[in-house]
Image (tube, rainbow, N blue to C red; front, side):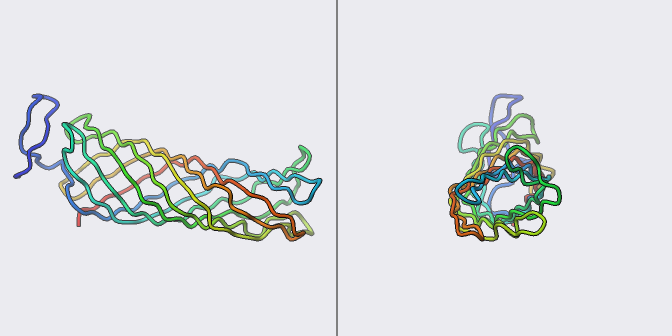
Length: 214
């Protein structure tokens, strides 16, 4: 190929060959979500900790990769839309979990992302990055037997940080495995009793992704 890329073995430059996914690409990502417990003050005297089961996340978008912005380092920018969701395991009031707790928390989000890919081997890269954007945080039907206490949503600022590994099979196809920490801040939610709180939704995610050159 015509592009010249850094070779860690020879410490020199040569043709990029099959391992460089330069230019625009389409991406999909998905995986599991471990949502941190959130706290909501149902009324002036009652704080409820919302604890979650393992959830899921899925996203898609478009990006552009710039090869060899520095020796052995590629740079990518992305636009990503996605959704994450986790169901309630239990609501905890005064330290006691309530049997039959229900509800789910979902976030539909859009991020602008920036990644750096650091060459480790010819076809293996360390992936480091993050993004900022907005998320529609939805606390859907949270309650305990006989009482739906919260059902509200709000748009909140969000960000995430990623770290993982990427393997490029061909000039057109790459897969990645990554850990993501994401946070949506100060979503203002109002309970059925009329009390409002600012709630953060934080989560730890294990993701698999696929990038296809366009």
